[in-house]
Structure formats: structure tokens, C-alpha cells
Length: 384
Ligand code: SAH
Image 1 (cartoon, rainbow, N blue to C red):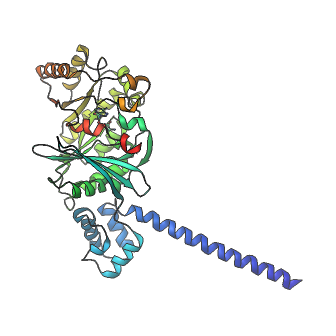
Image 2: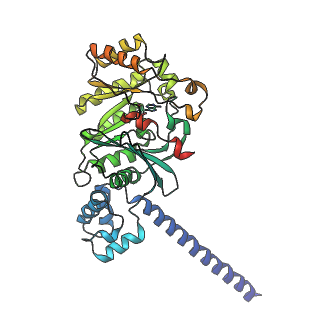
Image 3: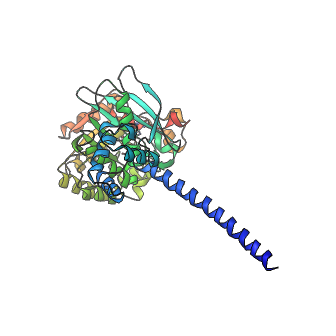
């Protein structure tokens, strides 16, 4: 009797040990997998912390940082100044690649090249390289899709799927830069899919990485972050001291119109945002770029010119006027389906009247040639 109980007890015990081992293995794999996706995207201070925790000298952080973001290698084997055992250990736990090249499309007229990259989770994101006379700009995404539902925006129509990590934000530069051999990328705009200030932490980390002198050589004066206006996050960005250039998707100076075309305005009003933008411009000593997509009958009236001139006289700024790229191919419903671009001759007059009022205005006539316009079209084709 006793031995039967003993046997049952033993059986339970061994089964439990077996289950425990499987669980531990599972958790270990999970932790490793998790870490694997996160080393790319670690900033220099984070890498220092990591190597110190391994008992390694902290200069290993600088070495790995340079290899990952400066030389942009594909594996730890290439990090030749690291001891072999450390390289092996890192290869076991981490991967330095966060994206895979999927497809690309080159415009033979403008030289603009659109890339589709795939994350390790299988999400598709888009980036665009836009060559200009004196510079080559890379437009990058910060989210897969976008939660904001701006009525004129292709990405908004597809909805939100995921935030990108700082590593995934960086690797768009790595892959596009490697492929685009016409010239080096000189500028970066955060104007691709998503709202960067709603993925604040990873966006800021990516800015820290891009702008570090050990990595890309692109300083913050050549990086522009575009936002719909998440007022408290503009404040937080200012507090980081990063001094990245800011573009603000204005599109109307009137709260009620902005509420309709950009529903996020009901949460963070234009007024609230303007307060933060003024503070940001003053603190960083930069001009704010106001982006303005021309929508017929909505924001192209005489009163819009007056309101723009009034607003812009109160803040160091310039205006980037963008012809609206139609969303007709997406067959949107409601207001999105009714939007039309202001005809180009009227856009020209609109711009001229603002210039007469001493507003700095930039307008390019060729659709798709403009950076914001090229970026504003991201999202649809790859997802469908
Ligand atoms: N969420 C951020 C960044 C992404 S959109 C933001 O809204 O600022 C970046 C820019 O793309 C917008 O400011 C807008 O100027 C442009 N854009 C979006 N949809 C567009 C369209 N259909 N036609 C032209 N430009 C568009």
C-alpha cells in the first residue's frame, strides 16, 4: 500500500520535473527570441549597460555600436575586433537584421525609389528614397499602418497594425542606403507610414542612433520629423534636447475643419499644438515646417490665406504646399471619397498670395516629386 503511494508520488514528481524542464526551455527560448529582436535598436548607453552586465569591458559597446550602425554589418562574425568567443555568444542570442528586402519600384522620371521591407513578424512597411539636386532624402516609417484616420491619407485608410522598433526604423536606412547606389542618403524625413510621436520611445531612440557621430554622419539638422500634432509629445521631444527639425501637418488653420479631416484634432487641438510648436521653435532655434495638402473647397479659400498668414507671423516657420494625391484607387467612403486636389493653377495663385504676405512658401508642381507627397502615398499597394 505504502509503496503504491510512494510510486504514485514518484511518478507525479518525475512528471512535474519533466513539465518544469519543458517550461524552462520554453521560457529560455522566448527570452532569447525576444532579445534577438531587440539588440538592433539599442542605443550606446543601453549597449554599455548590457556589456557591463556580461562582465565585458564597456568599450565593447562602442565597437558593437559602430559595427551595427556605422558599418551596418549583417552578422557578428564580421565584427573582427571582438574576441571569437564573444562573437559566438552574441550570434547565439542576437540577430543584427530586423528587416528583409521585399520589393522596390523605381520611377524612371524622378529617380524616386519606393521600397517594401518585411519585418520578422511578416509585416510590410514602406520607405522611399527621393533624389533632389543637392541632396538625397530617405523617407522612413515608424509604424505598420497608422491609427489616426486622417481623411486624405492612404496609410490612415489601412488602419494600425504595429509599432516599429528603433532597430526596424534604423534598418530602413541600412537596406535602402545599400540598394540606392546613385548617391549617398544625406537627409532623413520621418514622413512614412505612421505617426512617429505615437511611437515615441522607439522614435527617439532611432534619432539618437541616427545622429550619433559614430553611425550615419547625418546630423539632426538634416533629419525632419513630421507629426499631426500630439501636443504633450512635442513638449517631451523638446525636453530630450535632440533638436530634430519638426514638420507639422497643418492642413487647415480652423479647428472645425481640422476636426473633420484629422479626427485626432478633437483630442489635441490646433491651439494646444501651436503653443508647443512655438516653444519648440524657440528652444531648438529651428523653423517649423507647416505641411499643407491642398484640398479643393476645404482649405484653399481666401480666408485660409488670411488665417495662414496670421498664424505663421507668430512663429518662425515656412510652408510646404503639397498637391493632394488622389485616393480614388482605394475607393474610400465618406469624406475621404469626396476629396479632390485644388487645380494646380489655383495652388500657384494661393502660394503667390502667401508670398506677397512675406510667408516662406515651397511648392513643387510635379506630383510624387515632392517629398511629403511621395511619402503620403505609402501603404496601400503592398498591403493588398
Ligand atoms: N503622421 C505624420 C507622418 C506621416 S504623413 C504626419 O501626418 O505628419 C506625412 C505627410 O504626408 C503629411 O503631412 C502629408 O503632407 C502627406 N500626405 C499624406 N497623405 C497625402 C496625400 N494623399 N497626398 C499628398 N500628401 C499626403
